[in-house]
Image (cartoon, rainbow, N blue to C red; front, side, top):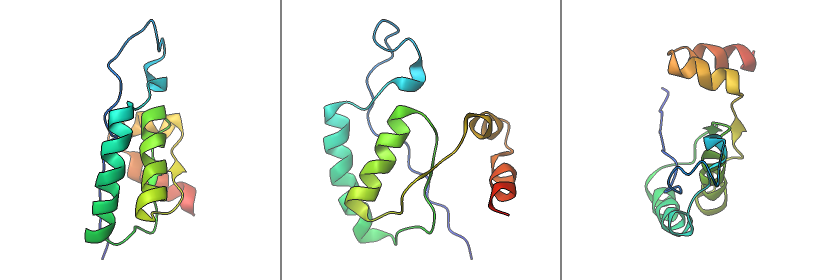
Length: 102
């Protein structure tokens, strides 16, 4: 049986093109980091670490995954490439990921 746990990135800075012209580079806030560290410790108590941790290439997603690694003993994140992220929006990400594992 497979289980899927989806975690949205922690609190990120508001969009601001003058600071982050490319929104994919927008990071977590200090508050987001602090709150998610606490949440990750709680998560560790209620779920087993997954076999795999996938994350998008967005800065805030990679930062969130790093906190899960550090505070909840999750495995090192596998960063999905941008083409997979685009295909996720069309609903075909799982098929793309399965092909890369074979």
